Image 1: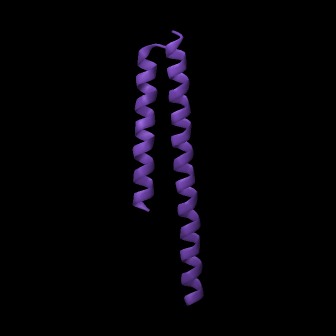
Image 2: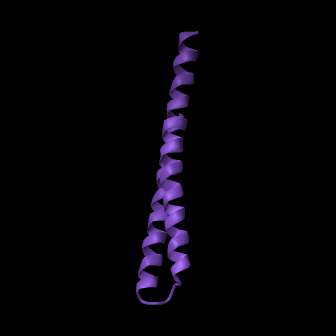
Image 3: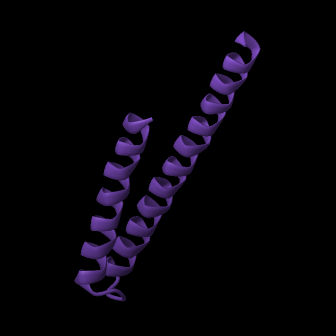
Length: 72
């Protein structure tokens, strides 16, 4: 019985670590896309609304990452 409990807990830890890694990857991607959009905006290639949209996406991912980490 104890072995099953320990194995179950270990699997939960592995799954949680994978979820956290995935959440951080999403946040990193949103941050890079935001930086790219800012560079495009600074040279006049992207409209201001694209910069706003990518900033909103980055903020959303940051908040979602925090919620995913806290929820587990």
